[in-house]
Image (cartoon, rainbow, N blue to C red; front, side):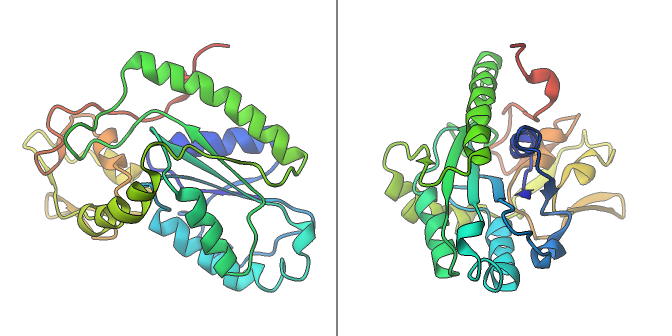
Length: 266
């Protein structure tokens, strides 16, 4: 079973491709939060696919893991620890910092051991600070081409249940990013307070449909955020009129949503 969380589609694509290559099922955890209490069959692998947010685990994923552990893993996997294979695939635009340590520590605290973990570099989506923007079309193609190979290699390892493989992208100053900049990022920037629309907004509802956590509504002729934002930026990147802004940071920034037509031909 593969659970995934995705905003702009990168992690969804990786999860679905991985499910195809491993003959597994693929479930959007944002759509089915109650599945945290579903039984896991003996010998069934458990995969988690999600984007690195601020070099950290997205809060929605962390909450899901905690619920899954308390409701299932604690009673099931502890009894059959050797029969379950638990792995993580984190997507990132550039690097993951110490995300591996965060994942391992979270699972260890809950009494579960991480079998293997990988990072897959995908096109950048974060645009809410100066110096951050989407990738050029050429770089998008290069990243997607490389990601196709990486996912195929991950699938081989998962099918063989290979343990102890931790292939992440810590990058430069990983401890600083995850444990110092990351908490600041979450405290200051994981908020929808700075979102607003320009007069070009037509209330078409595209952003409402793309938000994976149902954080947007249209009320009294206005687009409104409901303050449970994960900052995945699906609303910004999906707007056909480029009418959604995050403060003044996103003016003239590019947009990116994963679509199969972006995949390079092999």
